[in-house]
Length: 279
Image (cartoon, rainbow, N blue to C red; front, side):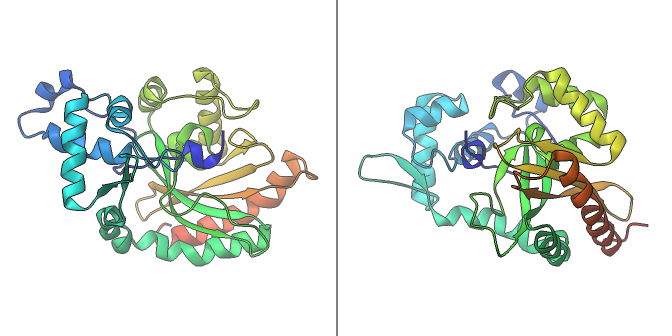
């Protein structure tokens, strides 16, 4: 499975569950389920499935076909979706306006960008800054070495948190009960022969990241790709993001890559954290 096939779309903070029908009463009368369903429909379009029928959207969102049809037509009228000649729906550029205010107002990506570029150039890899959203890690800033070919992961891309070094560092900052809740709801898939799929193994990897203050993922997301990530803190010493580098170096062992990358990443993370007011 490719890295682009594993990515998807959405936005909030922390691994929370989407409200199901039985949860609406518990959430209260102020919860607008129709809005939730509209956002679910938008998030059902992914890089590997950019064109979807009404039936496919209904299946992906677990809402009725009639509701999916009404929502898609509403989004089409508002300019967020359109249909191709085959009658399949796809997203329109207007959806970018939904996230622009967030990205434009965020200080963190702007502060981190030059440090990401320095990491990428020094380690000859791709360097990213990620935050956690539901069950995904979202890339909010990214840089790559000029010697690398373009990749399918860019700002706004999403990958399952548990299978990435960025995500495991962020999950490590959560209380144990939230990690367990994440594992109960996450869609765990084997992406390569090395992917950890047993919940207890994934949790142990997260706890290791908590203890060591870094995470290394060795070809679990894609064969030939190793990634190392470290936390980034704000003025309250809270983990607000994670910083990583991904390298494709078949000649070096995982231990050699860790020894080469970890000091550079920790230095960059410390500088970003200091710029955010961390001690």
